[in-house]
Length: 302
Image (cartoon, rainbow, N blue to C red; front, side, top):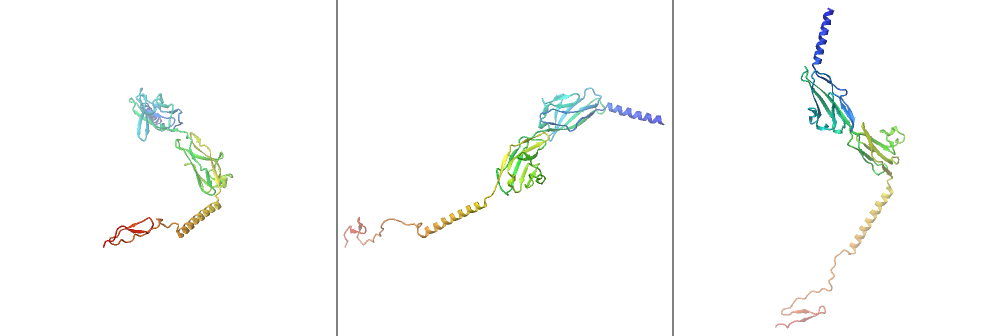
């Protein structure tokens, strides 16, 4: 009975070994490799078993637009042309990775002489990109007790950047209550969007501010910018408004007085006007140089 079991086990093992030899099997050392931009990266595609002496090896890049060849007919092509090589038997080595290389890659091996003639593995590559110098916006001056907003943004880094704010070269904590220096400040920090919102600025909030954008590939900072906090002169504002009201009132009173005295009434200065007397029958009157002096131009007709 024991011999029968042993014989059965040996038969199963030999059958498994037989089909393993007649099957192409692939594996990889890293299914999710990453690298920094412009560095070298290896996408390993290892053939564990195969019987075919000259298998067909292909690499495809898979994006939202679908798969495209990067290695076909023993030639590097597409996005990786002149930037990659194949290391035997099927490993793809990118010598100068760029941000556009972030994608899924599929290694395909076809072995015509094997019982299982095809196998593939998918590798998810991430190329990390260091953030560029962020664009920072800091208000130059803010009235005491008023709200204020500081902003920081950069869009080149990958993965997406996280943001930190600094005041006078010291990192600002997410929660002001955790630091004695910022305990009296009232602000809200958003590390995802890069905004820092003051609910009501205080004199202590004045200083030099700058922002840092960072990710796994590194960080970049903008130049420091000064924010001042000034007091609102309420008394001066009230006095200014009062002066304007008084001036307007004086102008109004002056215009009313001028109208009452007739300075704005229309008058015609045309000298001494007269009304030409009505002409009698058969008599023509001619005006002389002396106003109102008339003489007969012709005799009466009887």
